[in-house]
Image 1: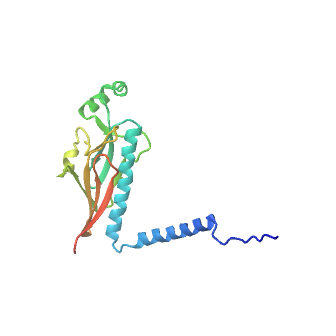
Image 2: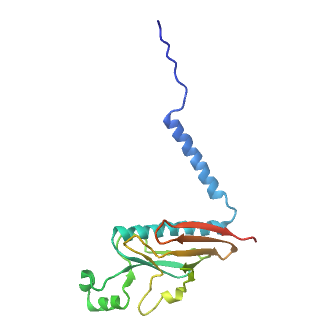
Image 3: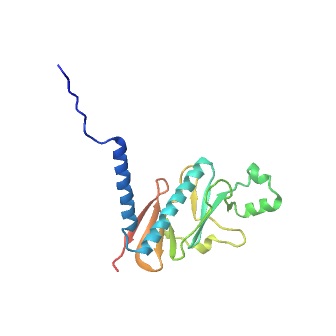
Length: 195
């Protein structure tokens, strides 16, 4: 008796992966070109950059066991770190540096590889709310003692709950909101208005 083997018809794993990669590429191109609003695209892109950056700050605070703060203006972010006046490192500084830290323990963050500042595109404006109260960015900047943080990212993996609203000067028909509840991952949403 003779056994006949048939060659099975089907796709190889490599062929399936190539097709999935092509479909993924086409979908990402469609997503990038789906909006006909350049102002919204620019604002959403900046919101994505902010989300990645703030999540990196949150992770670094935990992994480096340091409390980080974020000073802000309507156009720029600046990363700060908390300096305990009683720490060994601060006590080893000269008197002038210690006096500076005594006035304001939040100093520009200089350790590690984190991006320590980010400027918004010229047309994008930021409005920050903490506990539904609008933050006055002018109150965060003091020329004598330096910047104060608007948001905190603590080593305990908690952060200041906030809502950051991004708008574009050339189009007031939408707002991009970046939100965080203090514990969970950050998320963004877009609200469009009838124009």
